[in-house]
Length: 422
Picture (cartoon, rainbow, N blue to C red):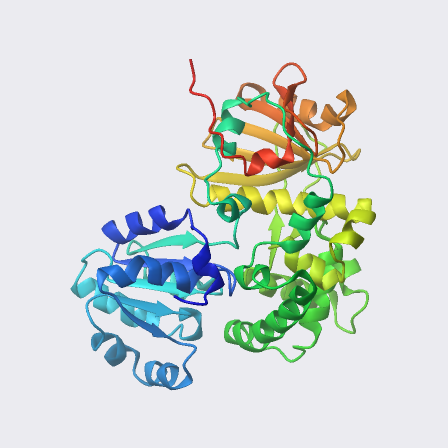
């Protein structure tokens, strides 16, 4: 794939994708447009002799819409169908084809919108489909070496070795984000790429998901959401600049979530605490996109420490989500906040009995006070609690007593694996 920026990097989801194709008739690889889905699909499937069709081709899409059953029946035995959200009618035809031949790996579908949120489509392939989520590039993929951070986190085992502070490099990584095509451009040109990206996505993918009249509202709403990333969802604030109702803005936020540009991080709950805030937090899918929407470059972000801290929280969440997508066990993500404002930026749950908390700081120092929310989470989680971590721009991982650790942010993409348990 000469000239393809996404082809430059390893994608650590590849192993899970190969495993899914080996035992499931239909595999859906979905995620935001331009995150590298087509490149990964072709990397995996071309050596196996798969055919390839993209529904970004208007003629091909028209043919599939005219006769979905006949279109699928004429396909070769193994196919990649790209941007399948553009022809949702094809799902029923895929069900018919798979019910006739349940051989694994028959179809690899890619999609830039979460079509499985439509109950009719999800039900049509129930029991026949494996869903894999691809994100923009993680920092460890950019480095070319898989990180052991999640295993270290749930094992509460961090290497206490020294390393340099990131300093302004931290702002650079946050502002760059993880979209391959944006990273292939010089920093001053990335904002132009993101502007064109948003325009194309609104005109194409959003229209495929839902017909709305005020398409010009969505880019401005996305910019408003970028200013609120890592904050509690506040529909009234988001609706303020627009001449549309709050319920309409609420619908638009949901729509932008369906094309993987926004996500709402749910609150963590415990029967031991009754005064917890139940409002989700809003996060953009990528901090490079957020920085472009806010019109800040690396230098401006480094000067604005409050904004850096806000975007850094989203950066850490998305790094962990990207690593979790290829992790061996499912991981659920939450935030924690009580009505007095005591909070933990991120709460991760693995299985039924493992809980960890992460607080994010752009500063180079950590104090005992930074663990206040983590200690409340520890008390609420009880025996399920594994550790609490303050990620900071420091030089070494340090214990802070009773399951608490200060850990450099660079450990997110550190190639050192977690120590083996004794």
